[in-house]
Image 1 (cartoon, helix red, strand yellow):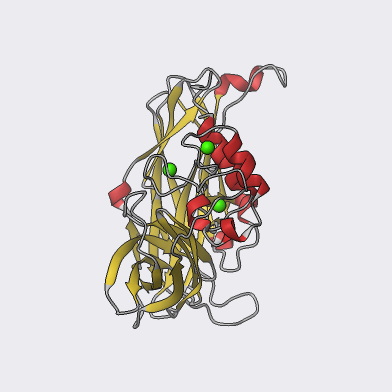
Image 2 (cartoon, rainbow, N blue to C red):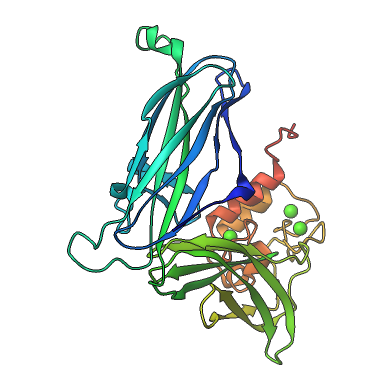
Amino acid sequence: MKAKALAAAAAAAVSVLLGGGIVVQALRVSPVAFDITTSAGASSTFSFRAINDESQPLRFRVEVCDWVRDLYGTNLFCEAAGEVPRSASAWIEVVPRQFRLEPDEAQDLRVTLRVPEAAPDGTPLEGSYWTAVMVEAVPEEAGGEPPGTEVVVKRRFGVKVLVTLAGTGRRDGQILLLERHGLNPLGVSLEFANRGTLNLPSVSGRIEVRDVAGTVWERIPVDPFPLLPGYVRRVTVQSARPRGKRLPPGDYALLAVLDYGGDVLVGAQLLLRVPELRLVPLAAEAQTPQDLDGDGFYEDVTGDGSLTEDDPVLLGAALESEAVQQNWPAFDFDNDGDVDFDDVLALDALRNPPDGSDE
Ligand SMILES: [Ca+2]
Ligand SMILES: [Ca+2]
Ligand SMILES: [Ca+2]
């Protein structure tokens, strides 16, 4: 079997923000992840190192815990991970489980992996399974204080362990959802599911914006992301076209193409309609709305040449009118793809920037 430490990230420091606003280096763990290819019934050992980077002695506690990433790619450890169907937590033992380190001292931790012959229900093991070794440290002197007199800052680090059974498993992926947000700049979200049994270390691709003639107006890259089997990842990308350079009115196709390392690429398509603005006064006593700074948003809703409190007030009053809804890109101040009361609030915030420059 092969235990390949991900040496590229050979040492990662955890920074902990203390109450006084001081950032301290806490514990360091190296390496931070293991990607192991093995077979059913096999045993193997590997090790990593915990280092006390602080100026005080630390007490360490080690446990094996489930781990997943949420829809947005954020790591969730232990209880937060919930039920993990392909958990390898029961396959792992770590020694030592408790120890103390003086400043700059290090401790090697030995991990034993025992892969069972089959799943608990007797079915053969297939594909990727995973868990994490959690290393947690607390300052030694914190233990002597009565409860509540001191805020104990926990330093916690998860070493990820991915176990793949050689020659088994399948890769399968699907784009579940493709949705558009605002047009200025264009924002698009997609959701991709790993429907196979193997970890996908790098899913990447692009979203193309094509007009009806097939001309590609833009290719927006989707940065590579990893995805565990059975999980879904949501990714939001934004056009590089500058604010104010909206696509010309017309119909476009948004075409998402992802490469997950399988035999084929996966795709999904969505119609994108950019309406032509036909602005008219939103009230009998008002003028045609104006874009005062040329950024494509029409903040002067009353058309009197300035942005005042009258503008969010009139937008709020005319929110449901055709004059607003059919010209939604002009008034989509929060750029989420429609006009609603949030845009009234966003326009009001433009009038009184939150940085305190209001009088
Ligand atoms: Ca504007
Ligand atoms: Ca105005
Ligand atoms: Ca909006």
